[in-house]
Amino acid sequence: EVQLLESGGGLVQPGGSLRLSCAASGFTFSSYAMNWVRQAPGKGLEWVSAISGSSGSTYYADSVKGRFTISRDNSKNTLYLQMNSLRAEDTAIYYCAKDIVVIPTASDAFDLWGQGTMVTVSS
Amino acid sequence: DIQMTQSPSSLSASVGDRVTITCRASQSISSYLNWYQQKPGKAPKLLISAASSLQSEVPSRFSGSGSGTVFTLTINSLQPEDFASYYCQQSFSSPRTFGQGTKVEIK
Image 1: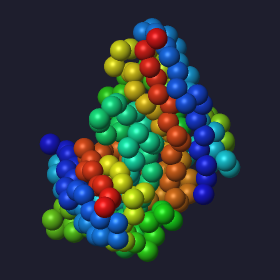
Image 2: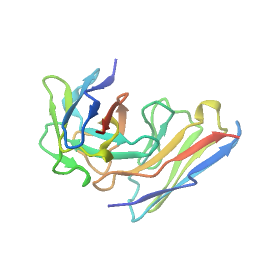
Image 3: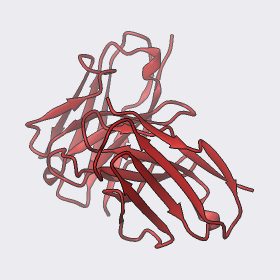
Image 4: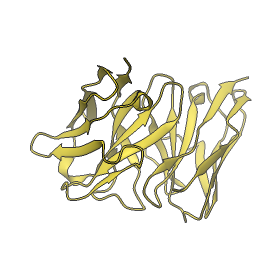
């Protein structure tokens, strides 16, 4: 079955760290770029980060640049998001999303999403 | 960053109605515009890519059009399962940005 399964969310204090994982199955993981997209409670979608299929290129939203790091292990079919220096405004459901291309380009789109993992930053 | 603005933010419609949602980009994005549907408590689902390319298994009552800065998502003959939120997203440049969403509710 083609699917993405996120894990690693939870409650963390401001300034803390968390690592999210996204396990992929049912498709050739290394052939596609991958993304993280988040959604604050009751709010819209915000793209967070992307990584090319070979891990050669990474991309970040300004709101997380320097604090979050995206990576992938193609041998384990797993995507990661290391989140440091967390803030209250990082509270959201974090979705991993598969791209339709191997390198993020103008023709990309997110055609497969996980169920999401909730991250709550609060003291 | 390219700003994406959807209108309306919400609408009420009846089963069988034709619904149109508009998405405007703050600068030209050619046809690099995607549409997603999100139901409560669920992950988004890609409906349309490249402004008008319907994804497989998406019903033909959904259609997309536009280029440059103005785009539309049309749902012909609204069905009960179409009541959801809809988001546009530009893929012209990084960072990828989404519209604020349009919630389609039952009248």
